[in-house]
Amino acid sequence: MASYSTERLILCPYTEADLDDLMILWNDPLVQPLVIDDEIAPCGSELKDALRSSMERAAFGVVIRLKTTGEFMGQVMVTVDPTMREGTFGICLLPKFWGKGYGTEATRYMVDYSFRWFGLQKMSLSVWASNARARAVYKKIGFKIEGRKRGTVRWFKQREYIIFMGILYEEWAARESRSRVHWYA
Image (cartoon, rainbow, N blue to C red; front, side, top):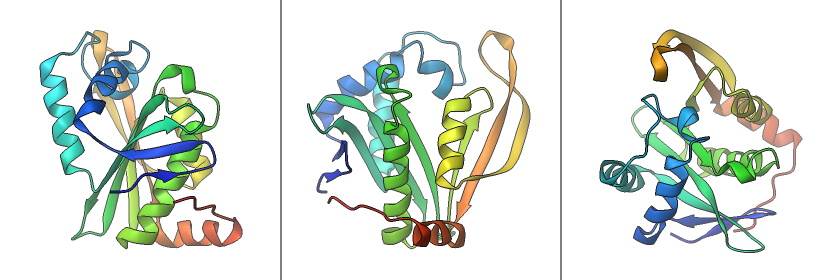
C-alpha cells in the first residue's frame, strides 16, 4: 500500500517497526482512558499482539506522521464489513498533537477515502461520552449520534456512556459536494 498525504500529514501503511511507537501511544496515561475500557496500567506483550492483529485486520489502517518531520503522531484505521457495506472508524493521537486540527484532518481524509473507494453505505464509530474533543471532531465531519449505551463499567468502578455515531453515504456525499476535498496521494 502506498503512503497518502494531506496538507500536514503523511498516512503510512503499518510495518512491524511501528509497533514500538504504537506501544508508546497506547501506554500513554492520557490516551489510555480514552481508548481502553480497563484499569489504567502499563500494557505489555499482550497489547503488542493485539495491535499486530488489528493492523492485519484493518481494511485501511495507517500510522500518522507529521509531514514536515516524519514524526510519529498516532494511528487511524477503518475496518470494513463487506456484506453490510459498513466501515468502523478509529483514531488515536499522542497528546502533544491534540487540539491542533490533526485529528480532524486525518478523520476527514479516512472517511472521504473510505466512501470513495470501499463503496460503503455507512461509517460507524463509538466514543466515550467524556471524550468531548473527539465527539466535536466527529460532529464536524458529519457523524450523527445514533445511540448510547448507558452505565458501562470503566476503570475505578466508574460508569460512563458509550456514544455510537454514524454517517451515511448520502450525508457524506451531500457534505462533500459543498466542500472541496484536497487529495494529495
